[in-house]
Image (cartoon, rainbow, N blue to C red; front, side, top):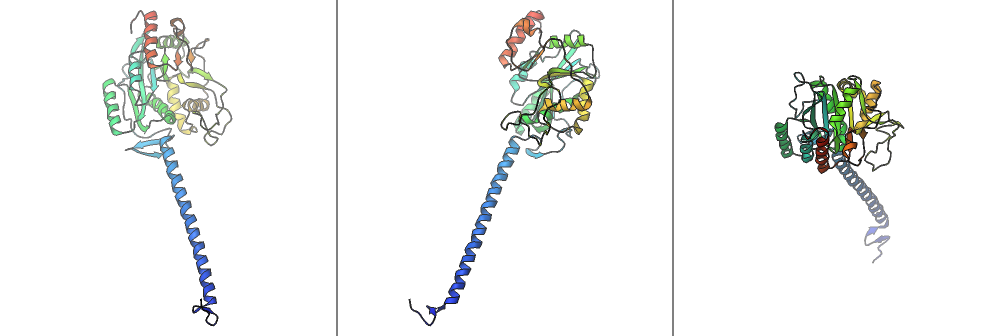
Length: 345
């Protein structure tokens, strides 16, 4: 290179330094822009993940033409029922309405229940009716199938909310609303699940023997339960969702029975009770606010929230047994009926 009177190739040293500072500044600006870009990409990715997780495990979502969005009216959902059963409670009110929580995919379970303990029948002169509680299925085709099934069997209660496990509180409250609005004339209500065996004969016998038709709530009593704070647990509840250290008394969601007036009271007070995704706990919170005490149906245990070994003598004296397969529902029912009702279904 040639030195020309304090310059390098005709460019002054001061100009070169200025160019160097400018280049350094541009590098700093470019670096900051790159960091900002990375941050924005990261935030966008996190937002997409959160949205995906929210829609998959949505606890408070209502469906509207396939879209999901959080709703603040999760306890007292506005809007009409999508499907209603054909039950006239004014002319011929049931003694007992059994509400079975299920999903669209559980058609086989509904069919088995319709032909076993859920079949409409008269026991000891009392009418028993079984209805199925469902949310909105995944697509229009499934909804069309649901509407056809409802048309055929007239035993489905449905509203337009996302049908997930964590919306079970919505589903149960939908059943309470139906009782409150359309069938307050019934005497008792039972909420149960598709994998539960229900001895409707013994249940009816015990309810008649109890001689209490108002202010009544029974099931498998859970009196000293506390929130599970372990993430990943099916029953995990955060401190934000429920800050308390213990739950008020409640009955296992596998099967509980209440008088119809209590169903109406639960529905009416639900809007003022803090929401929790665990349906049986939420019902317990409502009962606690209503000052309604849980009662045993019998001096011996009759509600079993776990699986127990089948035998006709034992199942004659139970009300519920949880963890029953579909093939077992049919087999157990046929054996029980043959032994206790002379084989008359």
